[in-house]
Length: 455
Image (tube, rainbow, N blue to C red; front, side, top):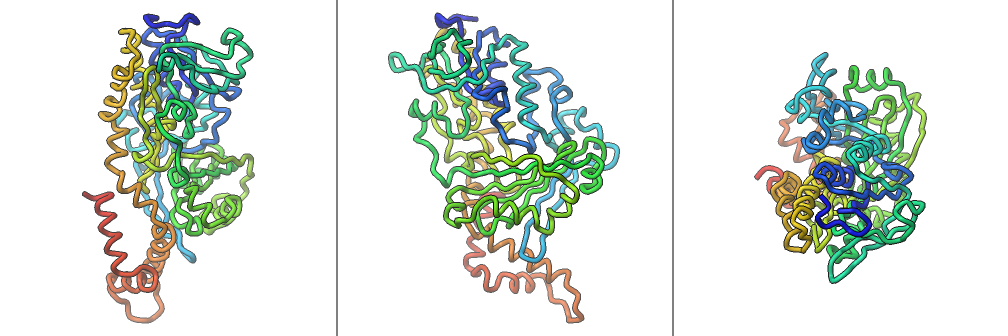
């Protein structure tokens, strides 16, 4: 390509070798562009704590033929559990995608099979492998290199200022290219420097803490009812001492990822140390039996974007595109959590628009604004908009403290057998709600739930 190449020989610089950045770099290289991929870690994935689930999406298959058969995922998730934890009990909703031997080959199945599942993986392993695919396509990968700021010229981004990298980029602290794609994480300093957003507020960011436990494959399969490379996930509501957030358990081949995700502002308000919450969660009745005989091997923490479409910044400026977590493309609606699939899709679309700009030699703001249009047509922004009310609803404290108590009290009544006559469930429900949530508030919240999820 090279129609707008800088004197240094690069058509584009991609900052961050995560799923979004590698997808963008790989997509551009496959179109003939000369791409520099910068990674601040010792290797791609070295700085990432993620050990969880990636929802299926078709984007990587467009970049790497046979992606799902070749990628180093741990387990194909066929069992999803949502648990509501009360003070004395918990209630779980279980979704089983397949049963028996049909599930064992789901990783190599059709896209319709995979769409009901996800894949657990380790980012340090996955990101490294994925970046290798980009390097094989001609991308230049520079690790241990931090992008410290943007190079601006005539009101447009024309490269990045870097630190580290051992001088591999030419011994200078500036690398030039007509196109920069910022995939530098949730707090994206590059997007902030470009004026695309003013930084995230505490109520838009969550703290994720994760503990990794070593356990045999046989024990994991037995405790979760799995076979072969089947996987399970379990999300928890009501396990965070009233702090807005939730817990999770993800199965890998021979490890369990167990952790909490908590809204930063709520965590600060409650003033409970995260490690104390983790200790209580790990010792709780639903979780402790899963860890019998397991060995703790790692503990880590990470900030995550949690505000959905409300925190999505402007996605482009002259010479600059923003993708992945840097663009806020990560969300939960209370039932599902997605991020990596959105990141890879945004990287692919950034590569598409970037390649078109390179072919035309046009990196102006109007030309690159086509990226936002592509994103609006994709499932990423459409899902963020569809569930924007759900994401807002998740900022109500009642959902994490009062309603788990109500559900637990109701289910205890349903299953209690003490020799007294039973009442109908509606009356049980009123009894469970009484003194916890005012009826008018319950009705208002029911309407919010309807707007968020049903209509």
